[in-house]
Length: 97
Image (cartoon, rainbow, N blue to C red; front, side, top):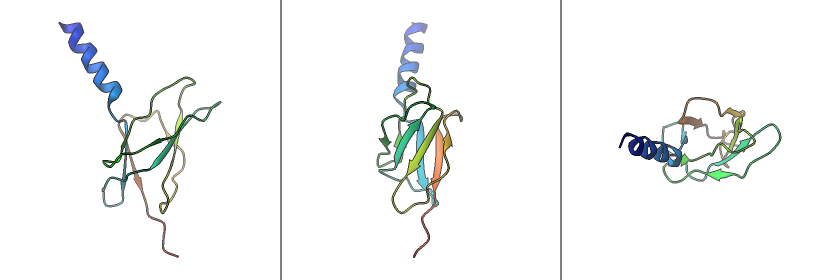
């Protein structure tokens, strides 16, 4: 029974979003492009849902960082993927003009 509960907890954690992206007001941002980065490979991009959530999987080679972008927002520097999960990112709007 204990094994079943631990297995279920591990499965739920593996399926849970591990990156959340919001704007400066704390509102979730949809369709933010997140590209997992490693030293030797650029992984396939994932996009946030309407709740600002995305699931970045830890594939081989090891993901070390994230490149995050959304039109109309400042592109932040590379995000360290080794931060405690979930990672919460705040994007700032580009200044007008």
